[in-house]
Length: 96
Image 1 (cartoon, helix red, strand yellow):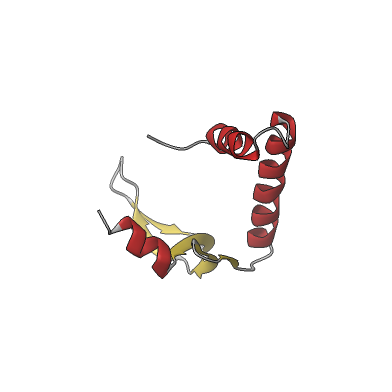
Image 2 (image 1 turned 90 degrees about the horizontal axis):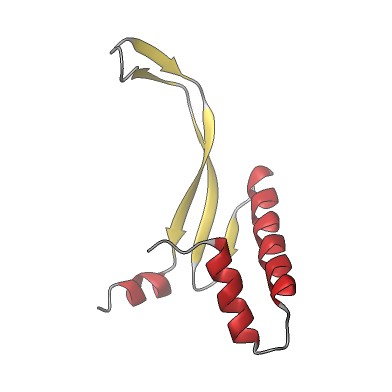
């Protein structure tokens, strides 16, 4: 099952136990993701202790192939986001 933003809002709402409204929870989650997006757009890393690190990496242009026609083509340089999970998360995932 994939966890969506709505699932995160619902879980936060349940954990708040009446201290926050559902709309406040949605605003908190939306704000958090906006901060992460803006930070990555600026080329900065996002480190969340106990979870992992999101990094922006630059990829240079490279040769590729059009999968439909098989014709060679040049793929342009671009920036991508990578994620490396923390040791804490990795060990929890591998406990089972």
